[in-house]
Image (tube, rainbow, N blue to C red; front, top):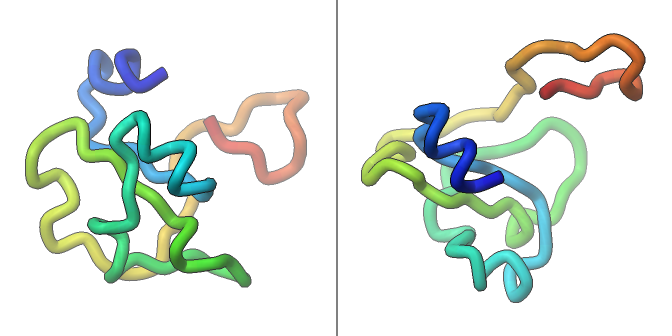
Length: 79
């Protein structure tokens, strides 16, 4: 999935997960300090991986879903 995101030209990947697990793939909370999510979450679990150097430079604010909704998926699912 990481290689495919890079191939498609995405600058970064954000996820909520376990840092010790996702750290092995290069994810960390180092670049997410100025980002927030709607609703409750544990800040240390908001992780990012830059696929392009500097992709998250200046990134700040509340994250909102963007993408396409896929018919038949769970409500709120965005691909």
